[in-house]
Length: 433
Image 1 (cartoon, rainbow, N blue to C red):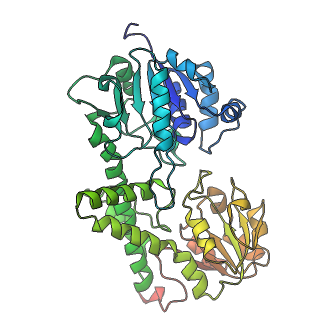
Image 2: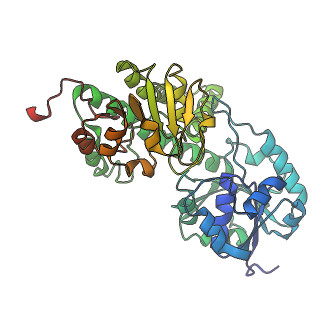
């Protein structure tokens, strides 16, 4: 086949990573096969019942039309010039990856590849994984995935850069693969397999460092009367830090990817006898900040009270509850009576003796002593604090992500508390300055 012919691309694994990546590639004009060994999952996707929640994903699949097809038939891989291994990699409670299913899938796919077809590992694997695969290395590559839950379509269609692991980064990439990368219109960074595999971890380490700074400094703000939200603009105007830096405090690290990379780098460091005290400190800091909302509830003597809870997923615009700070918070309030709401998941995800799920967030407030906003969904920001005050019995609002307006909460007579800002109960006189 001439290298000027548009390649057919296959993505194997139709969970979050594979489905979003396949859809983004089809949107660039390529013929894309979305393959999964689950007949049920393929049928759901064909019917428009997507297994993931991502803004614009369903509409983009519809726009792709016949360019994008879904199947469970592995024999169709023979049609593909480029094949991506793209299932999400499961992790355990400590963040360690289980690669058994990935290894089995890679072996199965290699047996089905067309002659000279290119294989790309897209799912995140530890350094050293790709080079150990039994395949012609001139046809084997690793590509770093940088999707963000809740913004995955944006990231996949408009990536900041594409990082490619190669056997020899000095050699030109195969033309079919090069054409797919160039269609995204961003810098392409070839490097050796191990460097690319470690690049993803390095990116997340920098993100964890920023989060840890925000969490540490915001807690100090809470104690001395400073406000972290006032400090952040001064940091973003520093070129060494940057306007796009992630400086929002939160309830520890959620989701799974960051925890997995921390676990990976600590494991590598322990094996290689290098110092990993800083990543270990990040883990400890995350665990400490995760309990912030619990400490606020207990300080208000409401650990056995009636609590309204808004948000259960680990972040907004996703269905994932993997390592959700919201669920971790509720697990540490076993004696509270919970009335919960989330836009995309049911109360069944909450392992608690006393929990009621409601379809309207305002209904959770009935006879509630406090409101915990544990996921910053936009639907909650659209609810006026005055209406909240009218519906609930108590006055305490625990809002770690600053979903509500502090001034509107104050005007509504609510006791609003957030990360990085002193609580109203402290002897902090705003008029003193």
